[in-house]
Image (cartoon, rainbow, N blue to C red):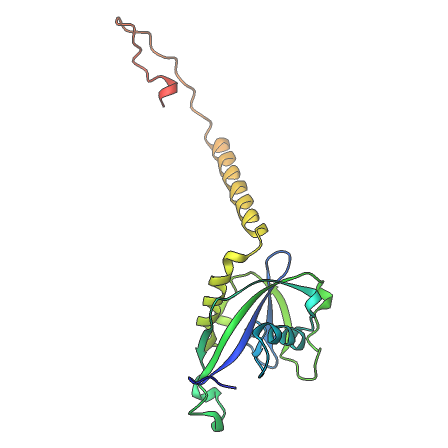
Amino acid sequence: MLDRDGFRPNVGIILLNQKNQVFWGKRIRTHSWQFPQGGIDRGETPEQAMFRELHEEVGLHPEHVAIVARTRDWLRYEVPDRYIRRDARGHYKGQKQIWYLLQLTGHDWNLNLRATDHPEFDAWRWNDYWVPLEAVVEFKRGVYEMALTELARFLPRNEIRNRYLRSSQRARDQESAAWTTEPPTPVSPSPAPSGDGVSDATPLDTL
């Protein structure tokens, strides 16, 4: 099923764990890593296709996840001719995708790469949210960057809080180190008032 421009409707899935790490799957018998994704069948909504692909590729059911957000519009990438079947060249151009950000509410052991007879991945791991794009096949990298950037503002706030706490701890550590290596200079007594009764020193409450 292609649109008038030759793009096949598709969904992409960014699956978060409780640490805001993302599911990162190794495509079977390749060295490429990617997020789960798949085509939208005729008569399916993007959300229906997402849940179907979620089960087919990683073995999860709707009760194992919560939808956090989705991209507003379609994100497109073109597929180079060398990756396109000969009989599809000339009318198939690439994929247009709606991306979903999901939160895993189940457990790691609920994931199953062998949920169907045609697995997409042969290994997986939890990765930092900003995945290494050099591990992604080149023609998908732009869409990955756009999807991650658009959905990053919907990340659960524990990531923002943890980043703040780490920054605060670093600041305290640096301050502590500075005091350890450079003891504070003693403050000299203020000079005696001059004849007009005004001190030559700057009052502390004006600093």
